[in-house]
Length: 181
Image 1 (cartoon, rainbow, N blue to C red):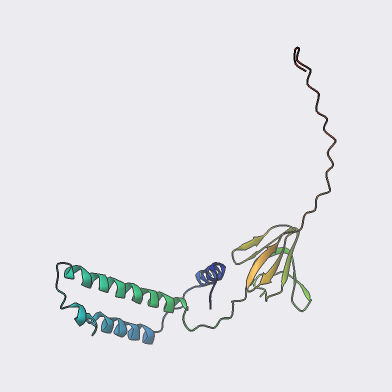
Image 2: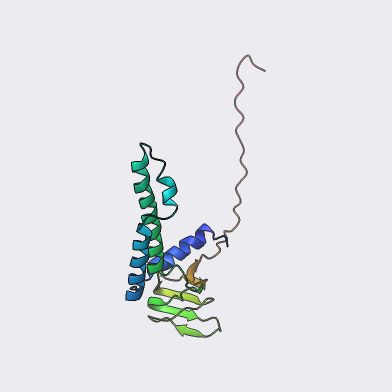
């Protein structure tokens, strides 16, 4: 699966908006045991050992740094829930609403209220004096937004301008210069 940059940004924004769950004691104990086991020299490291040169002293710290970075990525990913989670998008909900109407996907219309879940296809409309907040999106007065793929997208109305007609432009004829045709 090739994820687009927008998909990755969406995933990271969603992950960053949620609080990270506390790891279970069993997970912490198991991870600690695996990290300590990885800190011991691996079988392939003995292949590098006979190549004793002046730079050998730099190779081991570099390998240790790479192993530590990989372990950190796995640990952060596990704590953030990146591995083994389902693909379902979290359902957004209204954080605050004033003078707001919500049209649910089944066509029913309800008043916007704090905590109202917004499934995909929901339309959120604010009145002339209204505002609503959903996640990191704030709607101002007289705005419309639609929930798509778990995100609130503000609809920008089409603006059509009347055609403009300009008067014809007539350029003045420059006066003739003496001695020139």
